Length: 457
Image 1 (cartoon, helix red, strand yellow):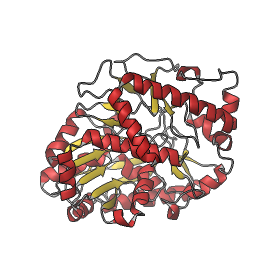
Image 2 (tube, one colour; image 1 turned 90 degrees about the horizontal axis):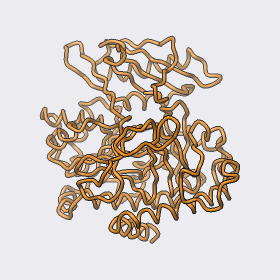
Image 3 (tube, one colour; image 1 turned 180 degrees about the vertical axis):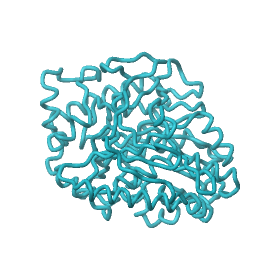
């Protein structure tokens, strides 16, 4: 019933628009700031001297993963949660989809800003995510589309990273724990060689295809070439962004509705796209602030340096004015699609595809997530960066955890990447160990992959 109440409220807020959305946002901000001050030692210290009731996010200090993770035990609001326990849990792949301490969903990030993150989702967060997901599908699909999905068996193909406690993998594992859903939800590892992935999707025949955006672009090429022949009603893309023309190409290839979501492990319900290719922020439950390098507001229509996120649902681990590191552009006026929620475009999440020639000269393309998912499984790596130094060579930059043996880690990295390349018919591609550590962009992010064209520039 709680989720149903949240869904009805979300629909009412959306229907009534600006003032209703803002009123909920301000009430929820005041509520979660008060909760954080009461239950989190970190926020009690950080917010000392602030007004008793805060409805304006700009009154709050900026936070970041780099600041918060060393204070994890003080940051969380449940004293039963400790960093030591959480790390042990996410280091065990057998526990993917299980509840941490019997009551929390625990997720990890790979650390594009140089710091690995561990994030709790409480039951309230999951209920809000479900309610906003239903509102999103209502915006994406007509009743006729729902009938078409049902006629195709309602099968959903999730193509994502497996083997780690990543948001998509944990969500897929959780869905498949329900016996009624298990046969309708297929999970396909993004690490699979493309021909094998195509064969499995052909056999599964999904009504909804949900890949990472870069993988979706590759699959559209396979559909156009006649090797993939599926007929989804909806292609729901996630993770990286793509050029606008790519969304049109994917829609044409599959004859399907194509939509995307921009979210974060810190806030899985952040946005959803519309037919105009804008991303609408669920501003009744999340606040996104485009800011410059000094964390001052950037006006609509201008690209930000970074973005500050406030998650209004998560009480277990409050995310308040948290620096996401992504550059966005806020639409200056109403979106032509008619959606009253604020609209943005993300400028800092382009999919950096790697393309190699086989020994026969045929191109083979890999997505960044195919490679990063492999590296995330190797103990001892704090941060990794893959540089496409030439058409047939990769250089791997590594930063190791304290106490890790460099040679042991490198052997695991070299073996894993070489095996992956061989599986894709690229056994001639050389893999070398870089002398330098991973390098940051001007915006402070560590890109997982640097393509050949950019490595030369």
